[in-house]
Image (tube, rainbow, N blue to C red):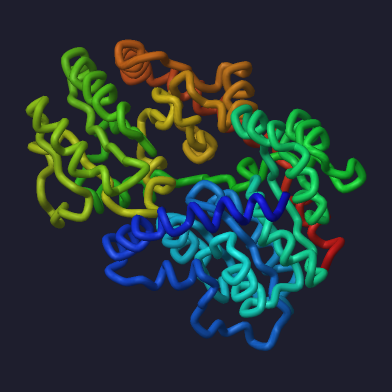
Length: 426
């Protein structure tokens, strides 16, 4: 079956390579990302230490990995830590949020020579992958060199599960190369075993996304952050975080409704998941005659009264900006993307809204709804209605935030279990 898999990817790869090259040049102005994905990495300073390789696909996985990486750094100072990502945004987040990493590189294409180059260059003693990244040639390459591969914070979505079961006869062979599985939920645990994982290698460790440090932000800190954006202290702020195509217009329509119902016009901050969509959002705002400014264009001391909308055009700042929000809508959920992490605003005790498409965070979303700790909204009309209610009745928002924070605290424990699992191989 590996022969058929490789025949397929070697046939497909030349067709998509030109797109990948153009994308790399457009975003980076160079082919450095592409060369790394072929396993050609620059010199990496490991300090002659053994290497622990951590793989986090994109922004969400990188952020989830932070408590884990901090703990690994503390417990195993004699190891070098190298992180790989697939996306540019993930790479930037890793560099900005985890500065003590020995290196941040792009994960190799799952081609024999790319995999060989990457493993031979980095020479890990253990490979840790977050969530579910199953790359057959890479995992086989690790196993051939007797390098343990550990899945941490494992999750199998409904869609992925159906796909995996359709090729179970192959997937079963692939995941034999994984030494241990730390899964988020009981359902994830059952699914990976059904897919062929050896039961004795599978444990439920919980979700690392609950493990971030409690963020007790002082009023002075909030005041300074608002001041850096020229926002007055008493200004209500609506943040639409990690929005996708099809959501921005819904958010804007809701905002226009809110602006007619609230005496003091709140500020809207839109943070698109992908920054290459900024021009698209600007066009929508122009259609609705809403003035806006990009965050990086704000000048010190400039009054923002003429700009009711700020577009966040930087990577890695959204989680901090949640601290100044009066109410948060988490995107990827009004359109069938699967949602994004609602735990970041919950750590700041913020009232949270999300749409009906939260299948990538199904267990978390259900937990919040069961505790009445967040509000699910189906469209812009309901979004406007709930935000008006929260801004008009601050106690409602405060209670929502407190309940959301309690859900986070109640679900801790994944970090300790995940470290214990990894420690078996170090």
